[in-house]
Image 1 (cartoon, protein in one colour):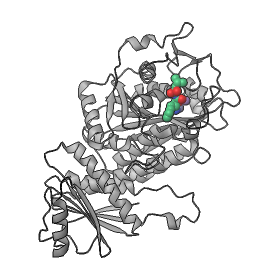
Image 2 (cartoon, rainbow, N blue to C red):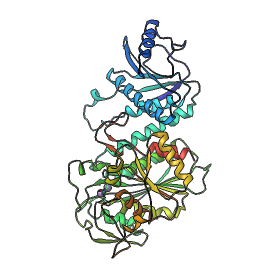
Image 3 (cartoon, helix red, strand yellow):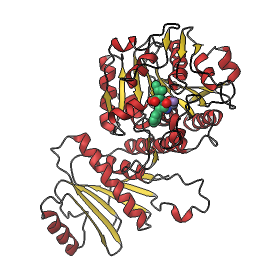
Image 4 (cartoon, rainbow, N blue to C red):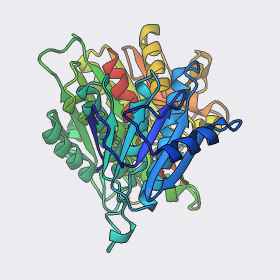
Length: 477
Ligand code: BES
Ligand code: MN
Ligand code: ZN
């Protein structure tokens, strides 16, 4: 874990990231005069916006910002630059770095610390003798007179929670099955202070969660249904916000088997939605935000074994409706449907689900954002979309027109579980909306949840997408 701390004074000789609108070697900074002259001179050169140097073993990086630019893209620029500083610090085997901000935008100090901490993430605990590979950066210090300690505390919490989500996503199914995922939520509940109840297969059967049971039918491992609740005494909301996460711990496609290369081999990530809601709960509870939040995670692997459901099967869902299941690879919506129906008992203010649901979403916008849609209230949508920009987990809103409902109609049951060849991300959302009776929003993270190559502070593998989004959104309520 990388720790971020706050100081009101700069100490000499530390590794430095200087964020500035106009570099000046002010008194507190007091760089050696020949170094300051060199920096000033270099920054005069046209189009020089960043400068990094190693001065007698001390790493110094300067990034020039134009304060007139829009804040959110600026924050993202800083996160990315800060990530490159993390890489440099680690390659120099250094432990500490200080962020010093000469601009008036104090959010940029926070963005820098966030980018650094997230870039410092590693998933190495299965590497025996990993010592030589481990990052050396341990402490990030923000020097500021205006930033509050609570802002730093929250930043530590949310970056830690994001890294926890990455860990869960990166664990393969032989290590993290549905039961282990539920155990992880229990541990996080104890650590952060929220309630976790886990329903086992017997209870899931009793509740007639037909969708979850159908997907689990081809598996040796039992399904789980995790119910997490954080209800602070001073909650501002009367009705809870409910978060639902897809917990397919591995998606083979079932009998509609996926091909291996670049497809099934990435499918340990199919519980990224579950990781996002569980770790968002962790952050929300640990930061003691005053909002009542419930999170639901239906979890199972999707395999072609035993009585695996066969394309053509008709499944009776928990809400009593029927689904003609024509493709066992459209399994996420089957388990989410039961969870969305279960959510009705909370009479939610708003329910948001998050899922690695469709290749169509990834095909449409790639890994640069989330595909969103739903019938939440305009004010709720606005806040959620805003949070997306704040944390740079942007939501591209897709249409949610009634016409798409037609594509899910079945001749022999209430719905099919697949639509036609087009609009696949939307028909999936439409299928889910049938199981809701409250303001609802659907987030498809199939694109950004898991990267096959490093992208700045989002390394290769699980990104933890959704955790920072939900934390910012709940904070905004
Ligand atoms: N888990 C996949 C979606 C996915 C694809 C996630 C790529 C991450 C990266 C989902 O269960 C799936 O297989 N969806 C099918 C639905 C189709 C059969 C209607 C798809 O997108 O191909
Ligand atoms: Mn699938
Ligand atoms: Zn899936």
